[in-house]
Image (cartoon, each protein chain N blue to C red):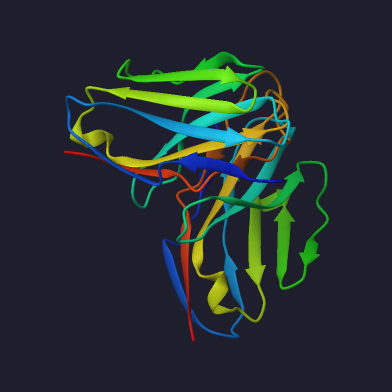
Length: 115
Length: 115
């Protein structure tokens, strides 16, 4: 069985602050893929990043960065210098390889950036 | 064109009504999905179509009936729904199904209220 835990239900920060969203996962597979999706108030989930289990390199994309640590089964997401447009619900997700495996979403973290 | 378009955006229906949700994508994707999302919860997979054939039904009640007329269109026919079926219904697509690294492209959803 696989599981994704996002312990932070809601976070509020003031604009320009940095914020880290935590994601911890459980899986017995050695090959798997991790994702982050953003769901703004408009409703659609937007893909942010994908990482496979063999690639532990951290990634930076503009103000966004991701820290993947296999040793602690974590895939945390940091927004630097947050902006009001970052306000959304963020979902971490996991998908195992091998046969059909559906995406397992975490429960989401609602981020509110206050101007 | 990287959009998944869903109509209608909002739908209110009685328990005896029959209605349909529509989803369209023109990205050449061969896998299409229906997800159900209750408030403050992650999306839950309902159905997967792969190459216009139903490949996954996550034990969804028969009052929900999916249809994939062609590779660009996905419908969800609703009949005799219950108030607890009120939710955001999200359509998604991906290049192919069965590849665990596939990222999903989501529509903005249909907010359904069953009275």
